[in-house]
Image (cartoon, rainbow, N blue to C red; front, side, top):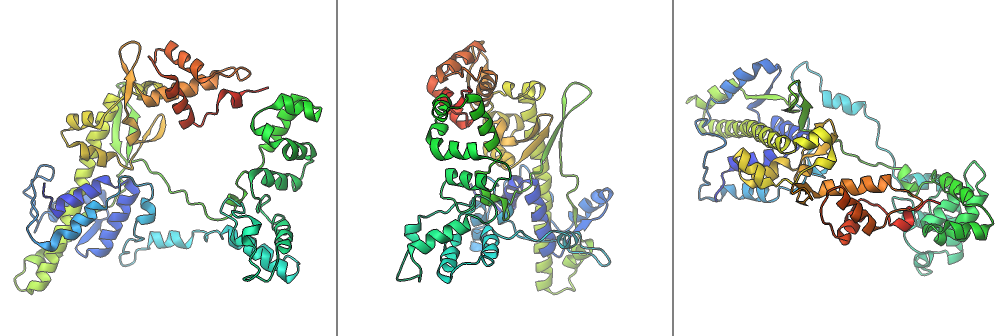
Length: 479
């Protein structure tokens, strides 16, 4: 199959999530002089009419068969298509930083927001070194401390052994200076930083805790391994204490931080904006809409369209304008096609997963992209691109659109249920179990069969339990 640049751009636009699409439009507005934003949504019809002038608009955007000319001018287009990622978890990092071009007398909203945004937090390394400069110690210890801080990872742990840092030929301090420096570094904020493992971090934090944690310190320092193995009765016997007191100590230690370094420094959480909104309607069904109403309404500037047809203008200028007009038209067509395709795909998903929207996760059905592709009348690859990086806002929350597609198995009643529904049932069974007598994997398997889930192997239960981060029965036991 040969693809024209127009089709390549259409597939790229289809795959972009809403926030990435906004940035793409910003970039085009910034780089294409003939493309402009219509201020009022009511001007959409006029803008669309004007945008078709000077462009080949007689072809159907969805069905046109477009062929690349046999020249080398389209190599970059194919490379761009080849580099489109399968998902968009990191699209915010890859996106070009752009902004709207403000009109005369118009305030630049993005620049205004930027000026009112707080400055980036300093890194953990900078935070520790600022404190370290105020520490009173001998020069060799100060140098050793700076080196130690450089090897503390983002979670706050010293990632190497002190012996590895000792190099008498390179540094003018010894191993004893490193030990002294580490003790001082471990007194810096946040509490627990500079530890070499979780146990040491807990001991550091408890030593600096405002409340008395002498019992917890003894518990961690002397019985850490048994504590990790959930051997509470044996610990209680050795400490001459009760299991209830140990449980209280564990609850008290839940206030401690296993990653103290993450309290400092920037932790980017990219925002998620749902592309599709699913809402119940008065007829008992669901209304599917797109959350793209605030996207800028685009059109081609009519003045430039007329210039591109004016024979009095030199050829080079007219060619430049015609090229940008085609580019702008392709972008607008691609956005319209993205909207139509995404609406059809989302509507098909809602129809096939009606029970999920009515009753919840336990009723998620197996659904293949091929099924939706047949219903919508597009290629399966188009469905894959349409759901990539997209989210659905529905009564169950904001969920990835791709999550509605999964395999499944036959239930006892002959129907089919998705593996996601099976995992949800496993989580439900574990949540409802008697924690004094937690269920083993085989017992969970039997419970699943009793709910009508069908025949499931024990190893499958173990696999999904691990995926759900559910520990084994031994570690789930409450004394």
